[in-house]
Image 1 (cartoon, rainbow, N blue to C red):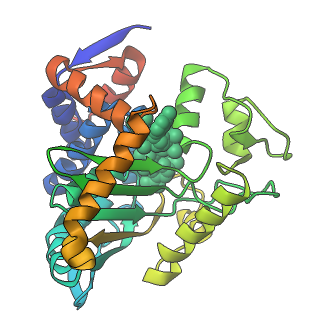
Image 2: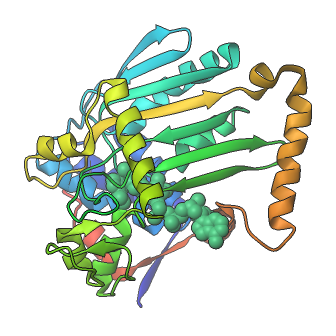
Length: 337
Ligand code: NDP
Ligand code: PYC
C-alpha cells in the first residue's frame, strides 16, 4: 500500500487547515487537531485523521456549530456541567477539566457532565489528561443507535465506549478504552474503504444474518462484545451518560440526526477519583497493591491495555507517521481555499 510520511506537526497543521478552511473557529480546530494527531500518533486508526472526513461532513451539513461557545456551570461541590452549545466536545472538555480536577482533589470524587456535544473522538486522551493530574478517571458516551442488544438484530445502542485510567508514579498510566460493541464503527468503515472483509461476530446484515461484508454490516446492526455482558454495559452507558445527565440516548441522537449522517450529538459523563481522599492513610499501600496487580499481569507475559498504543506513540514521536496515500489525498481534497 502506498503511504505518505508525515511528522506529527504536519498531521496537526493539516487537521487545523482542513477544519478552519471549512468554517470552524480556530479554538475548536486546535482542540480537535490535538486529539486527531494523538490518535494517529498512537496508531488508533479509527480515530486518527480519518475522522476529519466525518468532521467536515458534519460541518458542511450545517447541524454542528463550528463557533460554539461552551458554558461551564458549577453545579455542586462534586459536579460540573459544560454545555457544549452544539459544537464538538473537545473544547468543552478542555474548559471543564480544571474544574473537575479541583473538585475531585477536594471532595475525593467528582463528575463532569458535558451536554449538547457532537462527539467523534476516542476517550483515552481525556482519561489520560486526568491521570496526568494524579487522579483515576472513568469516561463514557453514547453515539448513534447502531448496535443490536444481545439476542436481538435491530440497532438500539450506540458503540458506547468506556475508558478508565489509573495514575502510576514514574510510569505511564494504566488505561483501557473500548467500545461496548465488538469493535468501533470506525474500524468497520476503514474495512469498507480498504475493500476488506470483517470477521464474523462483529455485525449482522439488515435481514439479521451474520455478515463479513462491511457495507452490509453498516446497513444492518453491529453486535456487542461479550454477548449479554457487553449488552448490559452498553445499556448502562446509555443511561448514565444520557438520561442521568439530562441528555440523549443513542436512539434519540439518531433521530436528532434526521438522516444527515453527521457525528452523533448527545452527552458525555466523566468521573474523576482522588485516591488520597478516598483511601486516606491507606493510599500508599493502595498504590503498592496496584503495582503488584500490574506486575502479576505482565509477569506472566500478558500485556497491559494501552501498551501497544504507548509503543506506537514512542515510534511516532521519533519517526512520524505513515498515512495511506488514498486517505491522505481524500483529506487534502477537503481543504477549501
Ligand atoms: P480495541 O478493541 O481496539 O481496543 C480496546 C482496548 O483493549 C484498548 O485499550 C487496547 O489497548 C486493549 N487491548 C487490545 N488488545 C489487548 C490485549 N491483547 N491485551 C490487553 N489489552 C488489549 O478498541 P475498540 O475498537 O473497542 O475502540 C477503539 C476506540 O474507539 C476507543 O478509543 C474508543 O474510545 C473509540 N470509540 C469512540 C466512540 C465515540 O462515540 N466517541 C464510540 C466507539 C469507540 P491498545 O490500544 O494498546 O491495543
Ligand atoms: O467508531 O464507533 C465509532 C464511533 C462513534 C462515534 C465516534 N466513533
